[in-house]
Length: 585
Image (cartoon, rainbow, N blue to C red):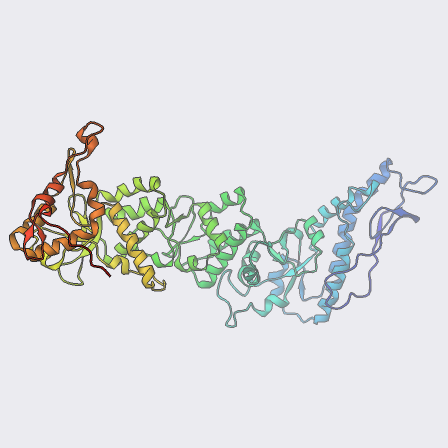
């Protein structure tokens, strides 16, 4: 006959969640033999040698008795827990629904006494490696048997009072039922009270109020904090880790219907943050199949099979047809969640996929876009292109050089018009001076100042220095896409010519010195840019290596046309003029 005996104190100190483990006890064959590392007494008719120094390990009867110890321990633990359990504590998860319908009164002291009994019981459960020799495998077998026993005191949660992920009470706290109602659960039904250390503290503090209902729906309950960590690990009771969070996400996705509340978004974010803290390939593969990515249209989608963009709060709804992340969710995202979603396949708005698939079709499509959206998309394209080096940038710029919608200056002051600019319908950086503008017979498109003045939502207005820097970036952007600082130059064979320059010179020669002054004002800031267009292309002209390239047609137009205004009030050729000496300070 096998018997186990446990030494229990009358009571642990009130509020204690830990207990010093009791002393090691001996195995008995009616009289003491020796200790094998257990903290409870084992009595049986062991076969022993005449010296009684140890149990005979090779005896089949002894081995059968030893193999019965784990079941006997689990039965004894179940009996001890059941006998001490007050009526306020549900006997199991299955009993929760029935007992919730039958109110009971139990003093808080009864619950404290029960906690004390459990603390002592936990302290006597052997851990792997603690038993020696003949009983070395017994602790593992005991832990396996205890898996079937409701031995973990846990919070009953709020499954009966609140829908998972729903709204809080008016005070922002969980209901009283969650803090007073307790339940006994098996180890596979429990989780440790706490999360991974890598989860930021401000989110850890919200754990119970946000995700406990989902834990309960997933068949898990939060242990109240008296279970020893080493024993919890040995029995497979996990912290709230990535695997647990995935189980909760599966229930969250099934139960959410309609537009997500702020609290539901917080819950979703916390669960993704937990997954992000230990994102293994297996977890990521499973997560990609779950509809847990909140869209701006209110849906939850799985990344697998969807192209979703994280465009930020100021870019929501700008590009028609773009499937974008919920703006409220994007605003609260921790950098670990941002990284997790990117690893899953959520595309950033500053990436090449968004540029090619969303921005380029929007900026170059057949339909004229609204002004605000056009400016925002063009700004996004500029910022992305200017973040690349020259070799990466050039092939991407080609998508826009062929033609794109541009907000240009209108005819009236302050007016903006949207025009499709292309190599056939050219864009300029500088406006024509007013006298020249009135006389010039052709269209002269110039990028609107709205680009440099535009501020994304929520951005602090630029200082003067930042505004000037922004203006330079826009000029560089337009030039890279084929805009001209002043007149457009065309290459014909080895030569450079310009129909726009010819028209400007015709205006000046026909209307006098006032227009000459306007043309000088237009050209003067851009001499360095146009210097390379004043000679023919040596390679195209197939000149001998030491030969000097001949002047281009543009140089001829500028040199042989009398367009340069003088102090005498006449227009002369450049070769017929001279510059006055600089005045001394």
